[in-house]
Length: 327
Image (cartoon, rainbow, N blue to C red; front, side, top):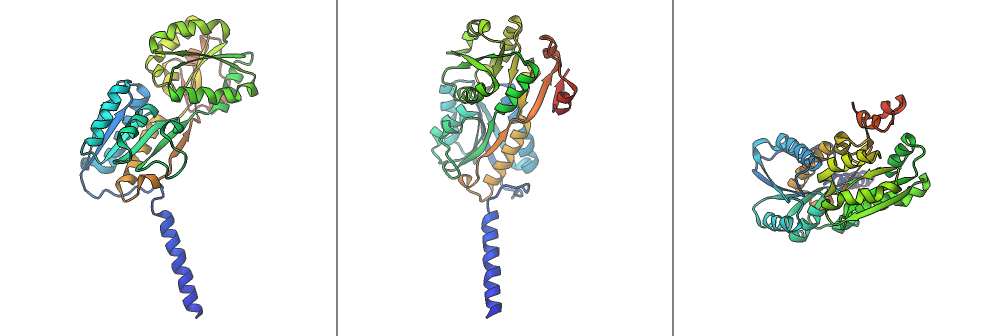
């Protein structure tokens, strides 16, 4: 009798273990089953951050499946009508997985797809914009979300500009990523003694006037999460320099372009992980059973050249903390 009980207990434990690991994401990637595979990637537009994610994706997916995978990349050109049209074409195509890059591209792809085709999204900062409320809430869909490190960003600004009080932020109207991030900063701004002044613009042509209007009110500018303005980050940097007001940013490439400093996600690695999630989706795992991965911007990037223009200098402790220092 005792042997029977022990047998059933052991059997039950093994069964539970197998269920738990069934679609669990881990370091072990499903093996290539030699079946040809087609993946369509929809980019919101042609920008360095987006391109870096796609580069990481292609690098990893090619290593995983070699000649047994074909990746088609289409560019939405930052235009909603174009992205909607491309989304419809991808849904109607013979591809096995649709990959969407950025929140706007993902929202439009999901609207066209409605869960009919397996979809993996990446670089989505605003999960509410795609109606994600928890595991299993997006039919046939999963992916990666990135989050700005609000506290560390404010701590960094406070450390480098201890007398700064007012921060200027320009965002594109109806850009959900930018609004989400701006509200995240606003929620804790008083805790750090900051007041945020914002200017909404209809299109990137209004950038100059918006920054000119903010300039007399602020000690610095802060950029983060606006996919439209990312297209003209060089213009933002040049304008901030002309006003002698430093620009801080929330992504590595903007800091490389000339922003003073900030915390960033590793976007190449984000693309790599997106490819690995596609590998799980390619296996027998249902996308909705794979929880959304959330990456926090924890890599400190410093630009010494830009900082010196404003007599901002990085102490030894800060430079030791940095993931990358641009000379």
